[in-house]
Image 1 (cartoon, one colour):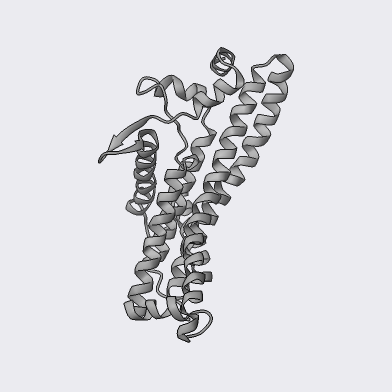
Image 2: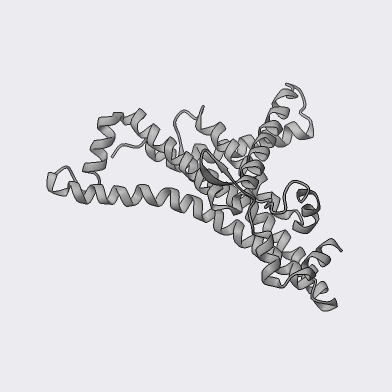
Length: 266
């Protein structure tokens, strides 16, 4: 009933625009989306707590259900990372696990009914979006963090001189006449990584949020709309479970792949 009432107060465009408006603020003199920052931070704490709670209660005997679930998840992530990063995974493995759990939790906020949740978030602010990964600022920040790690490992593994040599001498050779072409090629490769890394996750989650809102509007249009909106909404929610997990998996794998590429010599 809360969904119906909220959806009928506005036109479809106004209803969707209302739920796609961020709570804006300033931080260090720049504009930020406060709802995105708080949701991302709280879900990051939640992801760390989930992993910590399993580690704290771990036993050497027969594991409980929660411990067994986390162990299966760790083995799954480690196997995936091992397939693209055969070296020492002491850093990359935990990083990939943390990224996967965090992004899954942020994506999963899309399952919460926006109008029902708004009854609580409106006590905080009138505009409050629940899905951090449907905000390009979140996905781009995550991608740039991975990009910074990639640059760090490039320099750590190859040395500053070795990395600069690679920038100017790969892939077409070390002839000075080819340096501009090599640098241009490397520039495109480096720029495309954070762009594709961030836009893929953002695009899928933003589109999923739009579809959910459209279905809520349809459900409020009448008896037939309520029936078909409910059926299609259930179908989309089930399908969206795959998208939520798959996009987190892809983001995790690209994180591992980019760091693994930083360890390769050309």
